[in-house]
Amino acid sequence: MKGKLVKSVNPLIGALGTLEMMKDQVLGKDVSGRDEALNDELDGIVVDTCCPSDTGIWETGIRREKLEGIWVIVSQYDSKEEAEKAHKKWVKLMRTDPTCKLQDINMWNLKS
Image 1 (cartoon, one colour):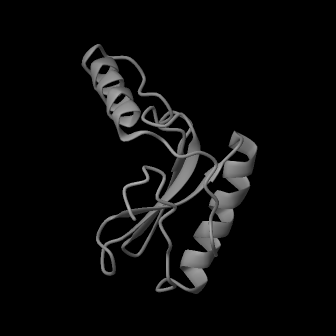
Image 2 (tube, rainbow, N blue to C red; image 1 turned 90 degrees about the horizontal axis):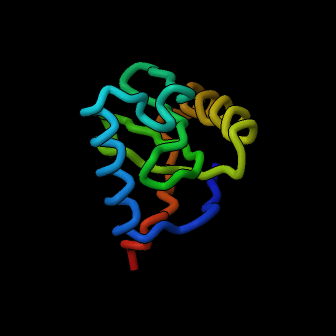
């Protein structure tokens, strides 16, 4: 299943968003995007969908400890509703084909 890239994000903007999130954590505020996050764990696989402060865009990341061992951002979404529907599809895919090829959407434009 191939995901979609809604918008590329400048890495500097992402870093500033991360610093803002860290400040909020220190001040005891809710961390943006995590309060509504969807998270499923399936035998060493984590499927996480949220709207993180570093991008401000709903996205799904998958971490398969036994395969890549890193987070792969597989898709972005225009809305929370779209993200919720897609999250269920990614969870179903990881249940039925846990070793399928995942393609990172390269939202930071770091790959050539």
